[in-house]
Image (cartoon, rainbow, N blue to C red; front, side):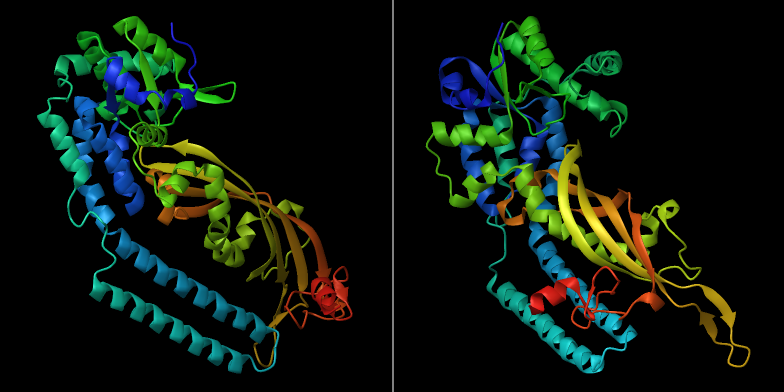
Length: 473
């Protein structure tokens, strides 16, 4: 029986395995579709690797079917990525512009002098930035420099066609086989027997059992042809893989089942390890960007996107912060509530992956946050002017952690040019509690004249906040 094999040992053996030891290479659907998500540099590298060992590549019939169902859409999405990047750049500038002008509104509320002049100067500079951006993209569209290197040709589809012409597609399962495998899947999934039991929440019908059907096809083909298998998949859920002594390995249940039912051997790799092995064994050059992409990890991603993630939820926190505060921890918040919060501090603590599907990864990012806001009580209306009368303000300080859920395309983990991207980010939950509060009338000065932060007895140093006072020194 074959024991635990370290990935670093396996990846150096592929050439020998396929040429000398009767191994074939079986690709999962996600390996093919992920190529559409890569950067141009990595796409070229991946295609060189795949083309170099094309004669050894095989596809289960279910993989071919799933690939052909999605390839056209993924190819079109790939072609639109440059346009999307252009739109995202413009959107980021608009968001930044709104934040800058919003800061002027804060200064106006505290009657800061000459704010109108500041607003006009900033508006002019923002207009100049918009014009520069527009000119930049217009010039390069004319030069046609932003097209993907594929130039309209779907090379992955060509590769699949070559695999079909070589008759390296497994025989298509019969309806009777599919029915029997799905029926077996019901009992396997109840026992959490791999593979595929993690798909019960995200898929329905026969699709729920697609991983099991692919596995059954591999077993059937290996048994009938008496061949060993290298299985390449980017599905890293625990219904395919497990961790033993800190090392990630193909699930031992699957290894045992394969050996028992086929009397052959199976090894499994992620596409990253697979491409690394092929490039090493067959002397395929890696550019600097490819090498960096191969070494990228989730930890690298966390560090790169932590600040953009927080920026994504900043506006929600500023204008709807009350939703994320444990009100049972607060002293009296005025009946008029808090219209706007100031985020005085934030710090990225940690992040972790909570779910992965064929096309998306979901993370949770944890931030420490300090919010400050002012509330008022409604006292009625003036009998003569009918203007609303409110109390003196009360400044509140809230501290705690926010958990932000982030969704990312699966293929992005290896895209060096787009490795700071994510599809969405939103506040999932929080535990912000009131750390302190002060009645405004007890404060010597309302706001720091340098940074506009509210002054409290704890941070007031001669009419400035402690941070600005320290800078003056």
